[in-house]
Length: 111
Image (cartoon, rainbow, N blue to C red; front, top):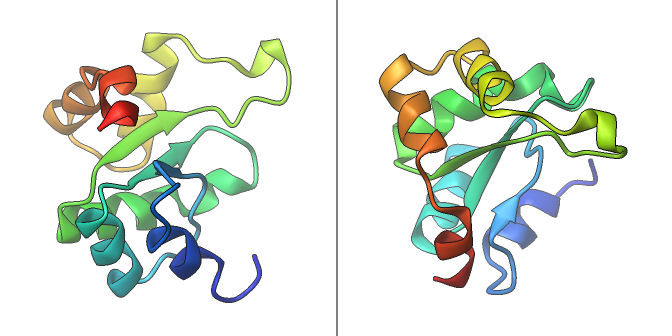
């Protein structure tokens, strides 16, 4: 990822979700939180290597999380059970995972 990419996204009013933020900093996650931008926990191979870091930083900065697949093909799409597995695999508790799963993404994107 090019340096400054996360920072630019976390300060952009047109961004709702920062996909696979990698080794996001506390500072950028705080900016995401202040600007109503969610961080993605992803099932996508390669991008998912930092899910635990993203989950921890989001927890420490009260940043909203979403679980997604970064789908490149229909076979990449996740059902609810798979999303739960990705969330818990990132180190989220069952309660935290349930909160993410109950997020009304359409409502979130409109806010």
